[in-house]
Image (cartoon, rainbow, N blue to C red):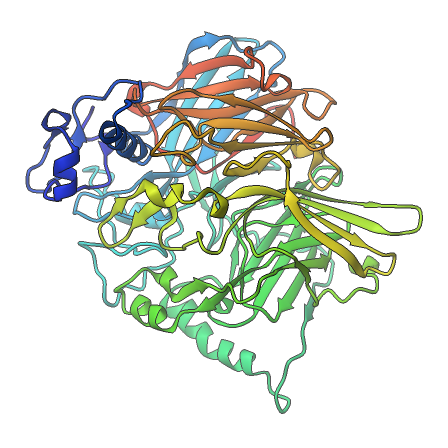
Length: 616
């Protein structure tokens, strides 16, 4: 292992638990003054039958998914094919995957995975040449440029970020909260490539070199066309004065000026309406993070980034949205209810706790609000959009695979939504991925809690009459017999907003006693018509992230799935190409390609397939 290329989330050897669990021959000390642990000998690929040995192996397997990778490669590297070959009919294009690349600096501070600097990976696939080339670059965000000395290679974290507290950085008075690390999702649209984050403008990337071109303002600096934006709101005033507007007026100069928050922050999840050739994006107002209301703005762009439509909706509920859906008639929001934590907000503002501790989940109701917002004002209909449909299940929605609507001859409508949702009891802003901001350590047990409270795929069905009134709403498992923790639902992108049959997702078959649910090790294919599932697994001590579908024909499942395999026992990553039609068969693997060990990278978040011959 190259010491300058990798860093681990630090773990103090002085802990009596770790001293008891770790055999002496398994650790070495590259720097005694820091007390960091690096693995000198990787255990066998087999999982031990001994409970204690399996705890040790599971702990380190989990840590290996979050190993910092400091090395970049600006020149394409041809990957070695270790199994199969690239099909001749594989479309020419590039699979982009983003996620955090760095978790620890050179001065003793660690950050939550969600605050890790964005590290963009690019796999360019050429079936005619039977070749895949690989590149990886850090996104040169403002925070990355400030925190990384490009001459010495040294890193020093100066930004808190929403989820972290710097151990050896400035705490009190540190207002650098909005650390836009561009690490959450990636998008290729028109002639541009973007890396996105949940709280700011996307960064534009030059697609051939992965050079960072800078921020791209999709809200104010693009062509607004000739349309007139519309604002829809609930009218709640006292004595003719809107109290929330007064509160917002007080908060805005603090949030915008002191904490440098953008007035409207784009969400990292976008949607593509393929039949209309439109990019759909959504933003929320910064001040609403601290107010009992939510302002959401939806934007629709053509391939030249001209805004074709813009609508703002003000909802009188304190909500947090990470992902959402659309149909021909609606924008669909699952309302994850939150509330202001007074004590947490005081300690967060003072710098003693992560900024996200100002918020907490709000499980005050046994139902979940679903807002059906009119996408086209001229087709708004008679239903009052301000009144949510209360789904008869309390759930925190993480990711949405798809949504679509169908009408019968009488004008009655049924809306179907496919998503992943978890219990409010499990979801914790500060502890995602098991990160402990006080110790800087990762605990896999948080992601392996009781199965029933973890993320599962659901299908929400809403029956509406011709006037738009809700007659029935029900929430069911996407598959009646599938009860395993599952997330990252994806579909054939051409079917976004349309009736789809297949959903692909990441799951775990539960073969590890200490890691039964996460990290994921299996791709599952749902057939929603036959109510059946098929799976493909990577094998022992190997994990996967989000699968991505690559279409090559007219049939919905005529194509390939791309997934990164994290072989933690070997400290290697592989790109795996699967035949989407053969998931569940022994010959589902089309090809497996090996990333050089020196470029082994941490767990990615979301990816995008950009075909070379298509210009969205």
